[in-house]
Image (cartoon, rainbow, N blue to C red; front, top):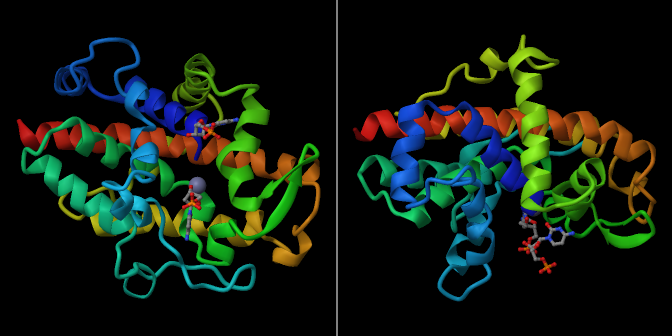
Length: 264
Ligand code: DCM
Ligand code: DCM
Ligand code: ZN
């Protein structure tokens, strides 16, 4: 996701963490403001472009070698490359946090990767996660990965400021509490196990990767290449984007609760 997606995931998580978790992470981040998580939500994205942080670039995704749209699926041994992947990274950064490596950077990495694993093209190897599929969006030439990260969420919300993210997060929070997601939110936490981050995040990756077959590339890559996708394609994508951002935020809240409890 782009700036908007990550900040929204962080704001949703802020809305759902326990009071003690908020106190705990606000203190480590040295920020007691109403945006203590959201303000650091995109740091890992800048870090991967620095010389010191380039090792972390593969930690944002897992390149599933499946065959969409005919068959989707993620296998850890097959798909997590030698340089690492988002599933391994969630494992690694979670255990660092539980081992009391509670610095800003580590918290940030863990949070960022929970967000990214919920973007369908971050769980897909085809065409470098859609990066090499050229598409048009509202007349702008870009690529399929980029419209899922950025153009479609921003068209939905109308901007990408911190306040746009707060507003979207509050809408999705209401949907989780007493709206369209109220009856399914509890099921989003099924199987969540802080002692087994690989199984937990593989479940998230598989559930997310399934949308590559149904919604991202339902008719294969040739059907979207060089097409204008801000119409019907966008309309079909919006419910998936809303669901995935909501799930990521809700799950991140529980993950942070479990880390906070585990460390205390
Ligand atoms: N960004 C975004 N949406 C935009 C423009 C930029 O999310 N419409 C994000 C992407 C980068 C940061 O802002 O993380 C800087 O973008 P750029 O390098 O494209 O200026
Ligand atoms: N990305 C991905 N899968 C890959 C390579 C990259 O999901 N195999 C993601 C990471 C960024 C975006 O695509 O969100 C652009 O990556 P980069 O800036 O490394 O080209
Ligand atoms: Zn991306």
